[in-house]
Amino acid sequence: MSIHLTRRELYEMIWTRPMTKVAAQLGISDVALHKICEKHRIPAPGRGHWAKVAAGKPPKRVLFRDVSDPLVDRILIQGSSAAKLPPEVQEARAKVKAEREKRQTKPPLPAQSGQSDHPVVARLVKKLEGAKADKDGFIRLTDPKLFAMTISPAAAARALVIAERLMTCAEARVCRFDSDPGGLVLVADGESMTLHLVEQTEKVRHKPTDAEVNALRKWEADRVRRQQRGQWFGDWDKPAIPEWDYVPSGTLVFELDRGGGWDGLRRRFADTKRKHLEDMIDDVFDGALVIATARKAKRAEDARRREESEKEAQRRREAERRRVLHQKRVEVLDAQIEVFARASQIDDFVEDYLARHPYLDLPESCRRFIDWARGYAEALRRTASPETLGAKLDAHQLMDDATEIHSWVRVV
Image (cartoon, rainbow, N blue to C red; front, side, top):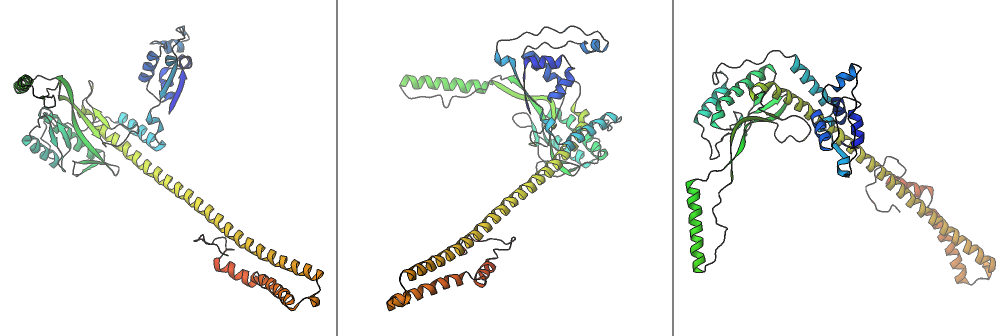
């Protein structure tokens, strides 16, 4: 949902109501609203402003100043995608949040990583003990019976603690883990979703190795020799020395339901300054339950749309059937009108001809022609007799409103 505002409109909003309420109305966070105000040079109420208002001593507003730049004056706010979530998903988010606030106890931390009796943890201990890091310094696990991991050897101890807490918390949250070729998947409320433990990287300036420096010097010396000999040379085979290295940072991240889409739901849980990933296991399961609700809501919505689409297609087919049926009835009617009109024309011709030329005075051939014309008119009328017309209508079921028209061939 996009919202277009001017600086003056947003200024009036934030000086009329607290910014937290204005942000909620716009579908963004109060931090995002503060940044928008700074970017567009909109003075905002300071700390304690609304407390003074509540005490009956409202401070004066900061003067609003117009700007000449139209790009600064126009504000486009892209609301959070979470605001577009179905009601049942928003309700699930509120429910897990309330339950998390009520929850007083946490799954017990093992005294020492690797001491859990759970077979997954025991298997993980053995796997990490024998694992070797790749050239980039990471261990990559994709065992169907273990969690998918991309971590450095230094993070192995934390990975074991996290695995133990996952197993302990899963039992309390009525969730489970199933095997999958890429690693264990989390099953929450009947919905299966991937779970990856990843260690982030940090960018550090690359220090060239002796081998890289020697390779570059050798290439440059070879280029000088080619140049002196007048030989062709290019840079396509020049040894490349990277400017940066990407090394393990020690920051661990859970990626839940990888590739799940941009729907405003939380799928990423990372270490912060105040909270480590080991203490976010409950948050991971809460997120999984909300994702499960969202999936079910999406399937229900998709089913509803498919049903509505099928109904609309059926309505179009029915309208087309009725149109074709009406068209075929009109074709039969036009044919009958044509037959009767032709017979009437013949009768008029015969009557007019005999009025001018008495029948007995006509030559034999003319009398025979007049008699044939009268018979032809009568034959035309017989083709439109109730018996003939009824048989034709019944053969094609044209007067049955529920009949199916399978052919575009003319009935007549």
